[in-house]
Length: 158
Image 1 (spheres, rainbow, N blue to C red):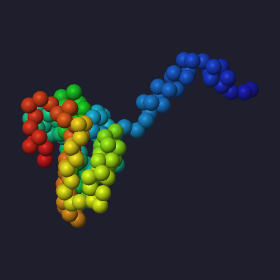
Image 2 (cartoon, rainbow, N blue to C red):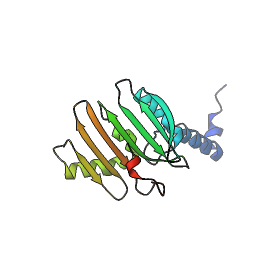
Image 3 (cartoon, rainbow, N blue to C red):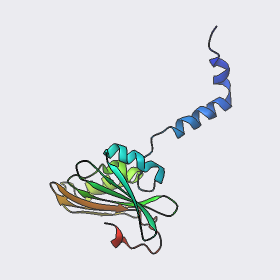
Image 4 (cartoon, rainbow, N blue to C red):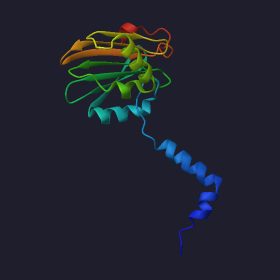
């Protein structure tokens, strides 16, 4: 007896259910502008441990990797990542952490610092990235100015 796939394929409801299942099963990343639920993905990818604290009434998730790099993700009261910082012997995967902001960041780096620099400051309308350091001692921070909560001082990003 054949499997009843024909009737399933013709059903619009089945297609919608399949689409919804596919979208909810997609991997999530705690990217700039992303949500709190995706921080576990970053922790797993960085193979680190997470410590949650509060700072100026906001939630901060700090991921420490086995190599000693510390990534702090700052969340709004609504649970959106509005900024992140890093400090340690290695620069974390900025493509992952910047998410949809990465393309404009990479373009700006290529335009302003084509040979690379130890100190980098990219200021675009939708994202700011500051990075500095040298071998085994890197630090930086990134944020979306539109997502920074009112009254939050950027000097608290450390």
